Image 1 (tube, rainbow, N blue to C red):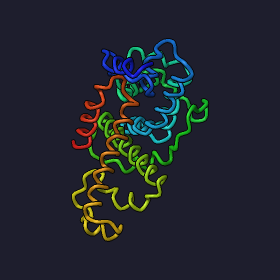
Image 2 (image 1 turned 90 degrees about the vertical axis):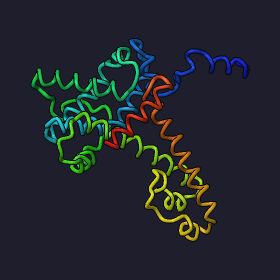
Image 3 (image 1 turned 135 degrees about the vertical axis):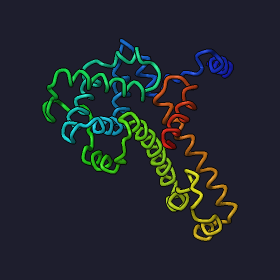
Image 4 (image 1 turned 120 degrees about the vertical axis):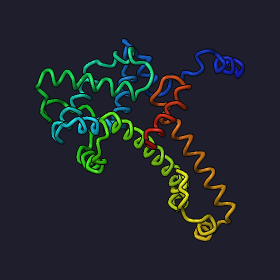
Length: 250
């Protein structure tokens, strides 16, 4: 393919789609799911399982029942051909996953026979002990299960992006630089003054400013890429960002 062909494709009406991302691969699979799409869905579920667990716990389920329900939900999604429902929920993985969980919980409550943990084959490994510890730190006010879910989804995205950024710095031998500057990624106004950081890092104040600017820029790029993995259309990325940050601000 020539460079002009690539430019024409990027200018086409479908240029807003990025078929190589995880969720777009799943959504495109539709009723003809593939092993690649199933693997992509499993990866996404493994990343975003905790917001689901927090949602179930806020619904009033006990720790053990929430663990049972969360694991069984993933059996339904990953091990029982539920991939095809993605065709009806094209768009954001976040919305698809919550809608699927709500349907699952409704069916389970109707049946009244939640499968006990260990009765079914776990399809992904989940650290429920860590999840429960995190849930115990959730505010005890009357936040709805939906708000808890949205908030934890946003925090998971931010944490994942920061972890990737840290790895990049460590791989280039800049661990100390990351540790000193990481608080500036989110625009922390109370962080250490640039001049003081420069003395600590043996850098000029101007060099510190440049390093922070580059770190923030790279962090935003990583965050956008993480969001791209959970939407189908490119134009959804900015809107998803706005919604998630509004969730954290509320």
